[in-house]
Image (cartoon, rainbow, N blue to C red; front, top):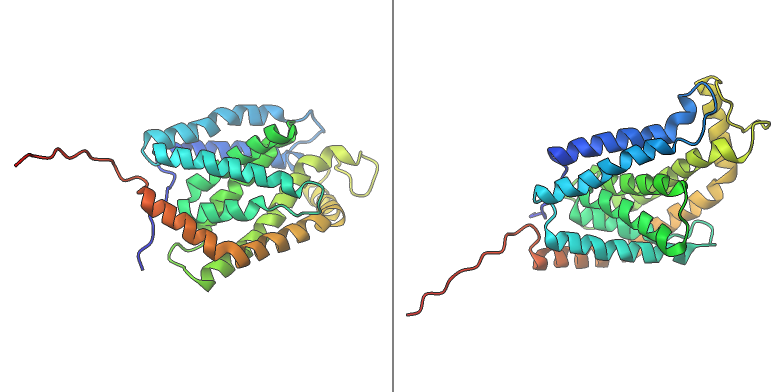
Length: 264
């Protein structure tokens, strides 16, 4: 069965992604790595921002993303950003994730990473929710778009939808854990059994964190997982077909050639 080519990180864009992700990962995991409670590690994300921009510029310069693809990236980013506020106030009801996952499935992991990061940042601007948490949200959403690459390329039909739905469940839990990592060290203080303890053993802090996570966030993560998986199973086939049709008709990554007609 013929499959659509996908955008992949290569060369400069792969190096930029590696550095960006490594710095971003440190930003999430710092509570388990430092020996004392320090100020908010915003400098990690400030340092990572130029690399994130380099991912896009390197992709464009390497012709992985042409003008049409950048335009589509902008349109889908606006769509995902507009869908996110629809779930505000509801427990885990966030319709943005299934669009992100399906678009990343069709257009590839580099497109998915950029779509997740850009749409989350755009959503923060639309809702007025700018703050230190936006960098965390953008990295987490970008990694969710990137992770769709783990699903085999050649799958189609019911098996594809089932695996995408399962991935949606994993992605929902991953996002909940990621958001709690940036929230946990600061929110509940230092005098409870669930608190972050600076300089404590890794096992102790991990126990405190996961206890906090399951007690406080599962009411959000479980509905988010169910809602995302259900949307993929119900609407995934139609949306995948529409995106693949748009991909084919737009002839992404196919160079435009002008042929001079010779008059008879």
